Length: 503
Image (cartoon, rainbow, N blue to C red):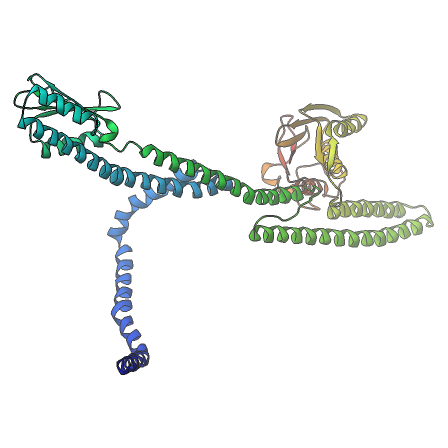
């Protein structure tokens, strides 16, 4: 007992001594390990930044970049397939390593032991036969080999052994059995492990005869390994199936979130409920909060603009009433035109600022909509043609899309005499082109034409009135549908306006 107490006291004293000197020990370790490693790191960085090393590394870096680009082209782009590869590839590599180790270790070890046992049995039979080499002894040995040992043994007349057969490249049995027979029998022999798939034939040259031994392949070879391989393949398929199901359930909420964001960007009604993992739910809740904020901002803007428009219309109405009581004169007509111009500009500005954002998308017959504008242009004296390809029913915001097409067709009618309207509805997009034979717009000024209140009088006729908001409103509506409006050179010689929105 006293020894135990003294041992505990010594251990406690040693622990206190170690704790008291722990900072000194840590500083010593820092000086011994960290400082040399830091200097070594600085040396490596300096060597790497030298010109000769950089010249040598450039081919490797180019090769790495080329391999990276090739992998980007070859590897799948979807999140589902990439996540599935991340799970399947390590599993396949692990199974490959396990199979290789099993083939190299287990099969080889078991086959070597079985070949050793078969070689020992054959050596024992040869030893017994050589004690009394007679026909009776040969029959006796054949009977012993058949029942207890499961071998078919015959003694043939003395004759040369057959020529050696070609060795199979991947046959472990041939290599192992040949080595064991050579070490235990020490006589000339001939072996055939290929001729009959389930049997092995061995011939040994004796002094007075040739001993032929036929054994089952399972006596010298681990033939039940297919069970392990089948189990491993089956378990891998089960794991892959479970991974596919779990991954699909995890990625489906992400796809729904992407669809909801796309529908919201196109101005469609969005019914979305966050599901899936915690992180996906957080992203879904963030999307819903962003959606609510945008809708509140649009609602507040619309309410404010309605109030402003009401006040401004009231003032303009007062102007008109005041002008109505004044005597007719040239100055009065100018003032009336100014008031009408202010009214048009006010309506155009409010339409641009409001953007028809509160309207919901619904299936709309584009053919009927465009034919209305075609009839209006023809009544105004413009030669107008219309061509529609594909299904004319598209999900858009009807009033906003009517305003978009109306602005483009009115622009074409304002500056040209010949108008061509063409609509193409394919699997992904609805594309509408409006061509005119007017003066057109230079290529370097086409993007400028979309700016609000900008009139390109240098390229268009100054006598035609306008607020400079038609193209800006059209692009705003198209982008609200998830598309865009672009300007191009028309085959008619004027301007082509191209509308492309997701169908």
